[in-house]
Length: 375
Image (cartoon, rainbow, N blue to C red; front, side):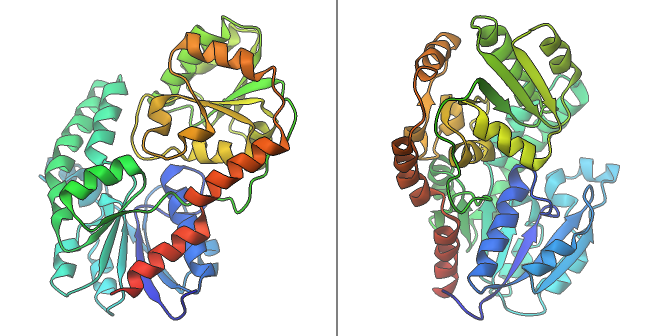
């Protein structure tokens, strides 16, 4: 355990409530480091979420910075996500001491070069290979203006990424991302995603439905739901539940046409947990193999059987805990097999052995502290 270690964490957004991908990793990293005695000076960009007193429980100080989204930022050579996080107050606060700095994402690195001139220890968290992520967003986008923005941002991010060749460390979130970043910077290391769970909380027995969950306003997830309903749910009689935030009209209209598919819109956190726990199968499909999907960790810590496609588990080291299937025919056959199996205490034990080795908050927080202690 580390004591009296102080660190700056610069977050791309306010990480509370921890209710979507990136901020889940940020918040539970903060909580885990705090439990191990690290004093955290948190810096957050404020634009679509309110300030939160909850963060003060885990941080020695919390600072908020406006993020203007003026049209002028679109016409810069810098990526929009970086250029709009260039508040000079952040820089002034960071140079007041010599504590290490942990940048959450490429988004927050506007002042990285200036800070390196002051001989600071700097770690950049990679949540994704950002230019791949934005290119995938463009591929799935139907609005021509948004598509052009995503393509432009992908090109800018690819150019800007060279900043990571500096004298810093890169904390990659998956093995796949680590392989990529090691080519840019030999000081890259694996730091798996932080998450809400300390122990597995899985029910034994058999559930009576198949669950797909996610942000249902996102094109990637709309595409997955459409595939599940048209290619899978129409071919079998099992019940399906589609649950998540802000379902798109395309999803709501499609679900109305199928008696074995139910929609749960904007469930509260406890309701979503119950849906995951009570499902017999959590179906985890994605068309983007970028970063890690926190829904995969949620399902493995709290759900019974998981069926995932290759892109969902790519580079996560978690493939042994899922039935990995890609085509609709493969998925349908696996559903039939799994509905004839009860989830047992032995299944839970086997999952625990692997899961707690790979995505263990305490061990991964200590890994980060050990790196800070070397310098």
